[in-house]
Length: 523
Image 1 (cartoon, helix red, strand yellow):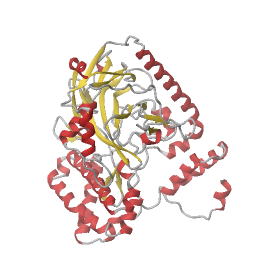
Image 2 (cartoon, helix red, strand yellow; image 1 turned 90 degrees about the vertical axis):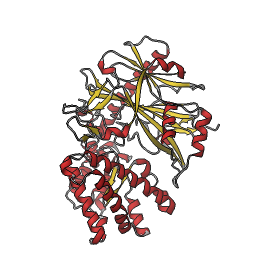
Image 3 (cartoon, helix red, strand yellow; image 1 turned 120 degrees about the vertical axis):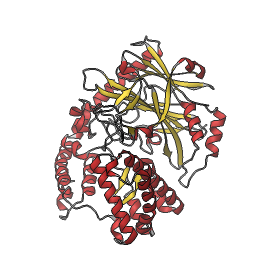
Protein backbone atom coordinates (compact mmCIF):
# COMPACT_ATOMS: atom_id res chain seq x y z
CA UNK A 1 0.00 0.00 0.00
CA UNK A 2 2.82 2.42 0.83
CA UNK A 3 4.39 1.73 -2.55
CA UNK A 4 1.10 2.56 -4.19
CA UNK A 5 0.95 5.93 -2.39
CA UNK A 6 4.52 6.80 -3.41
CA UNK A 7 3.73 6.15 -7.08
CA UNK A 8 0.65 8.38 -7.09
CA UNK A 9 1.13 11.68 -8.95
CA UNK A 10 1.24 14.70 -6.68
CA UNK A 11 -2.10 16.49 -6.49
CA UNK A 12 -4.10 18.42 -3.94
CA UNK A 13 -6.60 16.40 -1.93
CA UNK A 14 -9.84 17.93 -0.72
CA UNK A 15 -11.17 17.19 2.77
CA UNK A 16 -13.55 14.52 1.54
CA UNK A 17 -10.71 12.63 -0.15
CA UNK A 18 -8.56 12.95 2.96
CA UNK A 19 -11.31 11.54 5.17
CA UNK A 20 -11.96 8.69 2.74
CA UNK A 21 -8.25 7.86 2.87
CA UNK A 22 -8.39 7.74 6.67
CA UNK A 23 -11.32 5.33 6.51
CA UNK A 24 -9.32 3.27 4.00
CA UNK A 25 -6.46 3.09 6.52
CA UNK A 26 -8.69 1.70 9.25
CA UNK A 27 -10.50 -0.76 6.99
CA UNK A 28 -7.36 -2.09 5.28
CA UNK A 29 -5.88 -5.49 5.99
CA UNK A 30 -2.28 -4.27 6.17
CA UNK A 31 -0.01 -5.18 9.08
CA UNK A 32 -0.40 -3.12 12.25
CA UNK A 33 3.00 -1.45 11.67
CA UNK A 34 1.97 -0.35 8.19
CA UNK A 35 -1.40 0.90 9.40
CA UNK A 36 0.25 3.08 12.05
CA UNK A 37 2.61 4.56 9.42
CA UNK A 38 -0.35 5.22 7.16
CA UNK A 39 -2.17 6.87 10.05
CA UNK A 40 0.60 9.46 10.28
CA UNK A 41 0.20 10.23 6.59
CA UNK A 42 -3.55 10.54 7.12
CA UNK A 43 -3.11 13.15 9.86
CA UNK A 44 -1.04 15.29 7.51
CA UNK A 45 -3.63 15.00 4.77
CA UNK A 46 -6.46 16.01 7.06
CA UNK A 47 -4.53 18.96 8.45
CA UNK A 48 -3.70 20.21 4.95
CA UNK A 49 -7.22 19.98 3.64
CA UNK A 50 -8.52 22.42 6.26
CA UNK A 51 -6.89 25.34 4.44
CA UNK A 52 -8.64 24.70 1.13
CA UNK A 53 -11.46 27.02 0.08
CA UNK A 54 -15.03 25.72 0.40
CA UNK A 55 -16.82 24.29 -2.61
CA UNK A 56 -18.91 26.74 -4.65
CA UNK A 57 -22.44 27.14 -3.37
CA UNK A 58 -25.16 25.97 -5.73
CA UNK A 59 -27.27 29.01 -4.99
CA UNK A 60 -24.70 31.20 -6.78
CA UNK A 61 -25.86 29.86 -10.13
CA UNK A 62 -28.10 32.89 -10.78
CA UNK A 63 -27.04 35.80 -8.56
CA UNK A 64 -29.80 38.19 -9.49
CA UNK A 65 -33.46 38.91 -8.84
CA UNK A 66 -35.54 36.80 -6.51
CA UNK A 67 -33.01 33.97 -6.48
CA UNK A 68 -30.25 36.27 -5.24
CA UNK A 69 -32.55 37.93 -2.70
CA UNK A 70 -33.62 34.59 -1.23
CA UNK A 71 -30.06 33.25 -1.14
CA UNK A 72 -28.94 36.36 0.75
CA UNK A 73 -31.88 36.07 3.16
CA UNK A 74 -30.96 32.48 4.03
CA UNK A 75 -27.31 33.45 4.39
CA UNK A 76 -28.14 36.31 6.75
CA UNK A 77 -30.52 34.14 8.76
CA UNK A 78 -27.97 31.36 9.13
CA UNK A 79 -25.42 33.91 10.32
CA UNK A 80 -27.86 35.14 12.99
CA UNK A 81 -28.54 31.59 14.11
CA UNK A 82 -24.83 30.83 14.35
CA UNK A 83 -24.04 34.02 16.29
CA UNK A 84 -26.84 33.33 18.75
CA UNK A 85 -25.71 29.71 19.23
CA UNK A 86 -29.17 28.30 18.49
CA UNK A 87 -28.44 26.08 15.50
CA UNK A 88 -30.32 22.80 15.71
CA UNK A 89 -28.05 19.77 15.24
CA UNK A 90 -30.61 17.00 14.80
CA UNK A 91 -30.43 16.82 11.01
CA UNK A 92 -27.55 17.41 8.60
CA UNK A 93 -27.43 20.56 6.50
CA UNK A 94 -26.61 20.38 2.80
CA UNK A 95 -24.09 23.05 1.66
CA UNK A 96 -25.60 25.07 -1.15
CA UNK A 97 -29.17 24.00 -0.35
CA UNK A 98 -30.22 26.02 2.72
CA UNK A 99 -33.83 24.86 2.44
CA UNK A 100 -33.02 21.14 2.86
CA UNK A 101 -31.76 18.94 5.71
CA UNK A 102 -31.30 15.21 6.01
CA UNK A 103 -31.57 12.48 8.58
CA UNK A 104 -29.97 9.08 7.99
CA UNK A 105 -33.27 7.47 7.08
CA UNK A 106 -34.07 10.01 4.34
CA UNK A 107 -30.48 10.01 3.06
CA UNK A 108 -30.68 6.25 2.52
CA UNK A 109 -33.24 6.76 -0.26
CA UNK A 110 -30.91 8.80 -2.49
CA UNK A 111 -30.30 5.89 -4.92
CA UNK A 112 -34.05 5.40 -5.44
CA UNK A 113 -34.58 9.14 -5.81
CA UNK A 114 -31.97 9.18 -8.56
CA UNK A 115 -33.82 6.54 -10.57
CA UNK A 116 -37.46 7.52 -10.08
CA UNK A 117 -38.93 11.06 -10.39
CA UNK A 118 -41.76 10.22 -7.98
CA UNK A 119 -39.25 8.92 -5.46
CA UNK A 120 -37.20 12.09 -5.89
CA UNK A 121 -40.27 14.22 -5.18
CA UNK A 122 -41.00 12.24 -2.01
CA UNK A 123 -37.34 12.40 -0.97
CA UNK A 124 -37.26 16.14 -1.59
CA UNK A 125 -40.48 16.62 0.41
CA UNK A 126 -38.96 14.79 3.39
CA UNK A 127 -35.72 16.79 3.21
CA UNK A 128 -37.71 19.99 2.93
CA UNK A 129 -39.92 19.08 5.92
CA UNK A 130 -36.84 18.36 8.05
CA UNK A 131 -35.39 21.77 7.28
CA UNK A 132 -38.72 23.46 7.89
CA UNK A 133 -38.99 21.86 11.34
CA UNK A 134 -35.41 22.80 12.23
CA UNK A 135 -35.90 26.35 10.92
CA UNK A 136 -38.93 26.81 13.14
CA UNK A 137 -36.95 25.59 16.16
CA UNK A 138 -34.07 27.94 15.39
CA UNK A 139 -36.38 30.90 14.76
CA UNK A 140 -38.26 30.40 18.02
CA UNK A 141 -34.97 30.11 19.93
CA UNK A 142 -33.47 33.28 18.43
CA UNK A 143 -33.44 36.32 20.72
CA UNK A 144 -36.26 38.68 19.77
CA UNK A 145 -33.82 41.46 18.90
CA UNK A 146 -32.23 39.22 16.27
CA UNK A 147 -35.56 38.63 14.53
CA UNK A 148 -37.51 41.91 14.51
CA UNK A 149 -39.92 40.70 11.83
CA UNK A 150 -41.09 37.86 14.09
CA UNK A 151 -41.19 34.10 13.71
CA UNK A 152 -44.33 33.88 11.58
CA UNK A 153 -43.01 36.37 9.02
CA UNK A 154 -39.69 34.54 8.82
CA UNK A 155 -41.46 31.21 8.30
CA UNK A 156 -43.52 32.77 5.55
CA UNK A 157 -40.34 34.04 3.88
CA UNK A 158 -38.85 30.55 4.12
CA UNK A 159 -41.97 29.06 2.54
CA UNK A 160 -41.70 31.52 -0.34
CA UNK A 161 -37.95 31.34 -0.89
CA UNK A 162 -37.49 27.57 -0.78
CA UNK A 163 -39.30 26.90 -4.09
CA UNK A 164 -37.51 29.83 -5.75
CA UNK A 165 -34.09 28.44 -4.86
CA UNK A 166 -35.16 24.89 -5.73
CA UNK A 167 -36.33 26.04 -9.17
CA UNK A 168 -32.97 27.75 -9.69
CA UNK A 169 -30.62 24.97 -8.66
CA UNK A 170 -32.67 21.80 -9.26
CA UNK A 171 -33.95 22.68 -12.71
CA UNK A 172 -32.68 19.62 -14.58
CA UNK A 173 -31.62 16.02 -14.05
CA UNK A 174 -27.86 16.75 -13.74
CA UNK A 175 -28.58 19.34 -11.05
CA UNK A 176 -30.71 16.86 -9.11
CA UNK A 177 -27.98 14.25 -9.44
CA UNK A 178 -25.45 16.70 -7.99
CA UNK A 179 -27.74 17.20 -5.02
CA UNK A 180 -28.23 13.47 -4.48
CA UNK A 181 -24.50 12.82 -4.79
CA UNK A 182 -23.87 14.82 -1.60
CA UNK A 183 -26.97 13.54 0.21
CA UNK A 184 -24.98 11.81 2.92
CA UNK A 185 -25.22 12.37 6.65
CA UNK A 186 -21.69 12.41 8.10
CA UNK A 187 -21.03 9.88 10.80
CA UNK A 188 -20.41 11.00 14.37
CA UNK A 189 -16.88 9.65 14.59
CA UNK A 190 -13.84 11.91 14.44
CA UNK A 191 -11.25 10.27 12.16
CA UNK A 192 -8.49 12.60 13.40
CA UNK A 193 -9.05 11.47 17.00
CA UNK A 194 -8.95 7.85 15.92
CA UNK A 195 -5.70 8.41 14.04
CA UNK A 196 -3.98 10.32 16.85
CA UNK A 197 -5.33 7.88 19.43
CA UNK A 198 -4.00 4.91 17.42
CA UNK A 199 -7.44 3.38 17.18
CA UNK A 200 -6.23 0.08 15.63
CA UNK A 201 -4.18 -0.49 18.78
CA UNK A 202 -6.58 1.04 21.31
CA UNK A 203 -9.56 -0.95 20.03
CA UNK A 204 -8.39 -4.18 21.68
CA UNK A 205 -8.43 -3.00 25.33
CA UNK A 206 -11.67 -1.12 24.68
CA UNK A 207 -13.19 -4.29 23.26
CA UNK A 208 -12.17 -6.14 26.42
CA UNK A 209 -13.87 -3.46 28.52
CA UNK A 210 -17.06 -3.76 26.49
CA UNK A 211 -17.00 -7.54 26.97
CA UNK A 212 -16.75 -7.11 30.76
CA UNK A 213 -19.76 -4.77 30.82
CA UNK A 214 -21.74 -7.21 28.68
CA UNK A 215 -20.96 -10.11 31.02
CA UNK A 216 -22.03 -8.04 34.04
CA UNK A 217 -25.26 -7.07 32.26
CA UNK A 218 -26.14 -10.66 31.41
CA UNK A 219 -25.55 -11.61 35.05
CA UNK A 220 -27.84 -8.78 36.21
CA UNK A 221 -30.65 -9.90 33.89
CA UNK A 222 -30.31 -13.49 35.10
CA UNK A 223 -30.41 -12.40 38.72
CA UNK A 224 -33.58 -10.37 38.13
CA UNK A 225 -35.26 -13.25 36.32
CA UNK A 226 -34.44 -15.55 39.27
CA UNK A 227 -36.19 -13.16 41.63
CA UNK A 228 -33.18 -11.49 43.25
CA UNK A 229 -34.33 -8.69 45.59
CA UNK A 230 -34.02 -5.15 44.17
CA UNK A 231 -31.13 -2.97 45.32
CA UNK A 232 -33.59 -0.25 46.41
CA UNK A 233 -37.38 0.05 46.81
CA UNK A 234 -39.25 -0.31 43.53
CA UNK A 235 -41.38 2.55 42.21
CA UNK A 236 -43.51 1.81 39.17
CA UNK A 237 -44.31 4.34 36.43
CA UNK A 238 -46.59 4.01 33.42
CA UNK A 239 -47.34 6.51 30.65
CA UNK A 240 -50.76 8.11 30.74
CA UNK A 241 -51.57 6.58 27.39
CA UNK A 242 -54.98 6.82 25.82
CA UNK A 243 -56.98 4.17 24.03
CA UNK A 244 -54.56 1.43 22.91
CA UNK A 245 -55.08 -0.56 19.72
CA UNK A 246 -55.79 -4.26 19.73
CA UNK A 247 -53.52 -6.44 17.61
CA UNK A 248 -56.17 -6.71 14.89
CA UNK A 249 -56.72 -2.94 14.88
CA UNK A 250 -53.00 -2.35 14.77
CA UNK A 251 -52.51 -4.62 11.76
CA UNK A 252 -55.40 -2.96 9.95
CA UNK A 253 -54.02 0.50 10.71
CA UNK A 254 -50.61 -0.31 9.26
CA UNK A 255 -52.12 -2.00 6.22
CA UNK A 256 -54.35 0.92 5.26
CA UNK A 257 -51.91 3.74 6.09
CA UNK A 258 -51.20 5.83 2.97
CA UNK A 259 -47.59 5.67 1.82
CA UNK A 260 -45.48 8.03 -0.24
CA UNK A 261 -43.38 6.96 -3.24
CA UNK A 262 -40.61 5.85 -0.86
CA UNK A 263 -42.99 3.55 1.01
CA UNK A 264 -43.07 5.66 4.18
CA UNK A 265 -46.47 5.42 5.92
CA UNK A 266 -48.36 8.47 7.13
CA UNK A 267 -50.59 8.53 10.21
CA UNK A 268 -53.06 10.96 11.71
CA UNK A 269 -52.35 12.51 15.10
CA UNK A 270 -54.96 10.24 16.70
CA UNK A 271 -53.43 7.15 15.10
CA UNK A 272 -49.98 8.11 16.41
CA UNK A 273 -51.42 8.51 19.90
CA UNK A 274 -52.88 5.02 19.75
CA UNK A 275 -49.67 3.49 18.40
CA UNK A 276 -47.69 4.87 21.33
CA UNK A 277 -50.40 3.82 23.79
CA UNK A 278 -50.19 0.27 22.51
CA UNK A 279 -46.47 -0.21 23.19
CA UNK A 280 -45.70 2.21 26.04
CA UNK A 281 -43.66 0.25 28.61
CA UNK A 282 -44.03 0.20 32.37
CA UNK A 283 -40.90 1.38 34.21
CA UNK A 284 -40.07 -0.46 37.44
CA UNK A 285 -37.30 1.69 38.92
CA UNK A 286 -35.15 0.84 41.92
CA UNK A 287 -35.35 4.14 43.80
CA UNK A 288 -32.56 5.05 46.17
CA UNK A 289 -32.86 8.82 45.91
CA UNK A 290 -34.13 11.80 43.97
CA UNK A 291 -31.75 10.89 41.14
CA UNK A 292 -33.94 7.85 40.34
CA UNK A 293 -37.14 9.84 39.77
CA UNK A 294 -37.85 10.47 36.06
CA UNK A 295 -38.72 14.06 35.22
CA UNK A 296 -39.08 16.76 32.58
CA UNK A 297 -36.05 18.69 31.24
CA UNK A 298 -36.57 22.37 31.93
CA UNK A 299 -34.71 25.66 32.07
CA UNK A 300 -34.49 27.53 35.35
CA UNK A 301 -32.17 30.36 36.39
CA UNK A 302 -29.36 27.79 36.52
CA UNK A 303 -26.80 27.90 33.69
CA UNK A 304 -27.62 24.33 32.61
CA UNK A 305 -30.89 22.50 32.16
CA UNK A 306 -32.52 20.77 35.13
CA UNK A 307 -34.74 17.68 35.35
CA UNK A 308 -37.98 18.51 37.14
CA UNK A 309 -39.00 15.29 38.92
CA UNK A 310 -42.24 16.94 40.01
CA UNK A 311 -43.34 16.43 36.39
CA UNK A 312 -42.64 12.74 35.65
CA UNK A 313 -42.63 12.44 31.88
CA UNK A 314 -41.74 10.17 28.99
CA UNK A 315 -40.88 11.62 25.58
CA UNK A 316 -41.97 9.92 22.39
CA UNK A 317 -40.63 9.90 18.83
CA UNK A 318 -42.06 8.25 15.71
CA UNK A 319 -39.18 6.88 13.62
CA UNK A 320 -38.59 4.49 10.76
CA UNK A 321 -36.08 1.87 9.68
CA UNK A 322 -35.57 -0.05 6.45
CA UNK A 323 -35.22 -3.68 5.46
CA UNK A 324 -34.54 -3.53 1.74
CA UNK A 325 -37.64 -2.00 0.18
CA UNK A 326 -39.70 -2.47 3.33
CA UNK A 327 -40.11 0.49 5.69
CA UNK A 328 -40.80 -0.44 9.30
CA UNK A 329 -42.33 1.76 11.99
CA UNK A 330 -40.37 2.44 15.17
CA UNK A 331 -41.72 3.85 18.44
CA UNK A 332 -39.15 5.53 20.69
CA UNK A 333 -39.69 6.35 24.39
CA UNK A 334 -37.19 8.37 26.48
CA UNK A 335 -37.16 9.18 30.19
CA UNK A 336 -34.74 11.60 31.88
CA UNK A 337 -33.11 11.60 35.32
CA UNK A 338 -31.36 14.46 37.16
CA UNK A 339 -28.03 12.66 37.45
CA UNK A 340 -26.08 9.46 37.59
CA UNK A 341 -24.53 9.83 41.06
CA UNK A 342 -21.16 8.47 42.07
CA UNK A 343 -17.44 9.09 41.92
CA UNK A 344 -16.53 6.96 38.89
CA UNK A 345 -15.83 8.29 35.39
CA UNK A 346 -19.39 7.47 34.25
CA UNK A 347 -21.07 9.68 36.86
CA UNK A 348 -22.45 13.12 36.11
CA UNK A 349 -25.45 15.41 35.87
CA UNK A 350 -28.43 14.39 33.72
CA UNK A 351 -29.03 10.81 32.65
CA UNK A 352 -31.74 8.96 30.80
CA UNK A 353 -33.00 5.78 29.23
CA UNK A 354 -34.22 5.27 25.65
CA UNK A 355 -36.48 2.34 24.71
CA UNK A 356 -37.41 1.56 21.09
CA UNK A 357 -39.88 -0.85 19.49
CA UNK A 358 -39.49 -1.92 15.85
CA UNK A 359 -42.72 -3.25 14.35
CA UNK A 360 -43.39 -5.82 11.64
CA UNK A 361 -45.81 -5.12 8.80
CA UNK A 362 -48.66 -6.64 10.85
CA UNK A 363 -47.82 -4.49 13.88
CA UNK A 364 -46.22 -7.18 16.02
CA UNK A 365 -42.87 -6.28 17.64
CA UNK A 366 -39.78 -7.63 15.90
CA UNK A 367 -36.92 -6.21 17.96
CA UNK A 368 -36.69 -3.97 21.00
CA UNK A 369 -33.49 -2.05 21.68
CA UNK A 370 -32.27 0.47 24.22
CA UNK A 371 -29.55 3.05 24.86
CA UNK A 372 -28.92 5.90 27.26
CA UNK A 373 -29.20 9.33 25.58
CA UNK A 374 -25.39 9.48 25.39
CA UNK A 375 -25.59 6.63 22.86
CA UNK A 376 -24.03 4.34 25.47
CA UNK A 377 -25.01 0.83 26.57
CA UNK A 378 -26.78 -0.29 23.38
CA UNK A 379 -28.71 -3.52 23.94
CA UNK A 380 -31.00 -5.54 21.66
CA UNK A 381 -33.94 -7.74 22.68
CA UNK A 382 -35.12 -9.75 19.66
CA UNK A 383 -38.47 -11.52 19.54
CA UNK A 384 -38.99 -15.07 18.26
CA UNK A 385 -39.85 -13.63 14.82
CA UNK A 386 -36.24 -12.77 14.00
CA UNK A 387 -32.84 -14.46 14.05
CA UNK A 388 -29.53 -12.73 14.73
CA UNK A 389 -27.00 -12.31 11.92
CA UNK A 390 -23.30 -12.77 12.71
CA UNK A 391 -20.97 -9.81 13.03
CA UNK A 392 -19.03 -9.12 9.82
CA UNK A 393 -15.72 -8.96 11.72
CA UNK A 394 -14.46 -9.82 15.20
CA UNK A 395 -14.20 -7.43 18.14
CA UNK A 396 -16.59 -4.73 16.84
CA UNK A 397 -19.69 -3.89 18.83
CA UNK A 398 -22.43 -5.45 16.74
CA UNK A 399 -25.62 -6.57 18.52
CA UNK A 400 -25.40 -7.32 22.24
CA UNK A 401 -28.40 -9.42 23.35
CA UNK A 402 -28.62 -9.78 27.15
CA UNK A 403 -31.75 -11.90 26.71
CA UNK A 404 -34.54 -12.41 24.17
CA UNK A 405 -37.69 -10.35 24.49
CA UNK A 406 -40.54 -12.02 26.39
CA UNK A 407 -43.55 -12.96 24.27
CA UNK A 408 -46.60 -10.74 24.75
CA UNK A 409 -49.99 -12.34 25.24
CA UNK A 410 -53.10 -10.32 24.30
CA UNK A 411 -53.52 -7.45 26.75
CA UNK A 412 -49.92 -7.58 28.03
CA UNK A 413 -47.20 -4.96 27.94
CA UNK A 414 -43.45 -4.82 28.55
CA UNK A 415 -42.08 -3.99 32.01
CA UNK A 416 -38.55 -2.55 32.25
CA UNK A 417 -36.59 -3.06 35.48
CA UNK A 418 -34.19 -0.11 35.90
CA UNK A 419 -31.25 -0.14 38.31
CA UNK A 420 -30.79 2.53 40.94
CA UNK A 421 -28.07 5.14 40.35
CA UNK A 422 -26.71 3.74 37.05
CA UNK A 423 -30.15 3.48 35.39
CA UNK A 424 -29.01 0.35 33.61
CA UNK A 425 -31.66 -2.00 32.31
CA UNK A 426 -31.49 -5.15 34.42
CA UNK A 427 -34.76 -6.93 33.74
CA UNK A 428 -37.48 -7.43 31.15
CA UNK A 429 -40.90 -8.97 31.71
CA UNK A 430 -44.46 -9.01 30.41
CA UNK A 431 -47.51 -8.33 32.53
CA UNK A 432 -51.25 -7.67 32.05
CA UNK A 433 -52.01 -4.07 31.12
CA UNK A 434 -54.39 -3.74 34.07
CA UNK A 435 -51.51 -3.92 36.56
CA UNK A 436 -50.25 -0.51 35.39
CA UNK A 437 -53.31 1.14 36.95
CA UNK A 438 -51.50 1.39 40.28
CA UNK A 439 -48.35 2.91 38.78
CA UNK A 440 -47.30 6.56 39.06
CA UNK A 441 -48.45 8.25 35.84
CA UNK A 442 -45.90 9.50 33.32
CA UNK A 443 -47.04 12.34 31.07
CA UNK A 444 -46.46 11.44 27.41
CA UNK A 445 -44.89 14.31 25.44
CA UNK A 446 -43.34 14.76 22.00
CA UNK A 447 -39.55 14.64 22.05
CA UNK A 448 -39.42 17.54 19.58
CA UNK A 449 -40.56 19.79 22.43
CA UNK A 450 -37.07 19.51 23.91
CA UNK A 451 -35.66 21.41 20.93
CA UNK A 452 -37.35 24.63 22.14
CA UNK A 453 -38.08 24.97 25.86
CA UNK A 454 -39.36 28.10 27.59
CA UNK A 455 -36.89 30.23 29.56
CA UNK A 456 -38.04 31.66 32.91
CA UNK A 457 -37.37 35.26 31.88
CA UNK A 458 -38.94 34.93 28.44
CA UNK A 459 -37.59 33.51 25.21
CA UNK A 460 -36.77 29.92 24.39
CA UNK A 461 -33.79 27.59 24.32
CA UNK A 462 -33.10 24.04 23.22
CA UNK A 463 -32.06 21.34 25.65
CA UNK A 464 -29.27 20.64 23.14
CA UNK A 465 -26.40 22.87 22.07
CA UNK A 466 -25.42 23.57 18.44
CA UNK A 467 -23.20 20.48 18.64
CA UNK A 468 -26.16 18.32 19.67
CA UNK A 469 -24.80 17.84 23.21
CA UNK A 470 -26.58 18.59 26.50
CA UNK A 471 -24.44 21.13 28.34
CA UNK A 472 -23.65 20.18 31.91
CA UNK A 473 -23.90 16.43 31.30
CA UNK A 474 -20.21 15.89 30.56
CA UNK A 475 -18.56 12.76 31.94
CA UNK A 476 -14.95 12.20 33.01
CA UNK A 477 -14.85 9.24 30.62
CA UNK A 478 -14.35 11.67 27.74
CA UNK A 479 -10.76 12.13 28.94
CA UNK A 480 -10.08 8.42 28.44
CA UNK A 481 -12.36 7.35 25.58
CA UNK A 482 -11.46 9.98 22.98
CA UNK A 483 -9.28 7.59 20.91
CA UNK A 484 -12.52 5.87 19.87
CA UNK A 485 -13.48 9.03 17.96
CA UNK A 486 -16.71 9.95 19.78
CA UNK A 487 -16.81 13.57 20.88
CA UNK A 488 -17.25 13.93 24.65
CA UNK A 489 -18.10 10.27 25.26
CA UNK A 490 -20.79 9.81 27.89
CA UNK A 491 -22.39 13.23 27.41
CA UNK A 492 -26.12 13.25 26.70
CA UNK A 493 -26.95 14.12 23.11
CA UNK A 494 -29.69 14.77 20.58
CA UNK A 495 -31.41 12.28 18.32
CA UNK A 496 -29.35 11.87 15.15
CA UNK A 497 -26.10 12.45 17.04
CA UNK A 498 -25.99 9.18 19.02
CA UNK A 499 -23.04 7.02 18.04
CA UNK A 500 -23.51 3.74 19.94
CA UNK A 501 -20.25 1.80 19.46
CA UNK A 502 -16.73 2.52 20.66
CA UNK A 503 -15.29 -0.37 18.63
CA UNK A 504 -16.51 -0.18 15.05
CA UNK A 505 -19.14 2.33 13.94
CA UNK A 506 -22.85 2.33 14.70
CA UNK A 507 -25.55 4.99 15.14
CA UNK A 508 -28.87 4.57 16.87
CA UNK A 509 -30.66 6.10 13.86
CA UNK A 510 -28.84 4.16 11.11
CA UNK A 511 -31.48 3.38 8.48
CA UNK A 512 -30.43 -0.28 8.26
CA UNK A 513 -29.39 -0.84 11.88
CA UNK A 514 -31.93 -3.59 12.57
CA UNK A 515 -31.88 -5.21 9.12
CA UNK A 516 -28.09 -5.62 9.21
CA UNK A 517 -28.27 -7.49 12.51
CA UNK A 518 -31.49 -9.52 12.35
CA UNK A 519 -33.32 -11.42 9.64
CA UNK A 520 -37.05 -11.94 9.57
CA UNK A 521 -38.05 -15.59 9.97
CA UNK A 522 -40.72 -17.12 7.79
CA UNK A 523 -44.13 -17.04 9.53
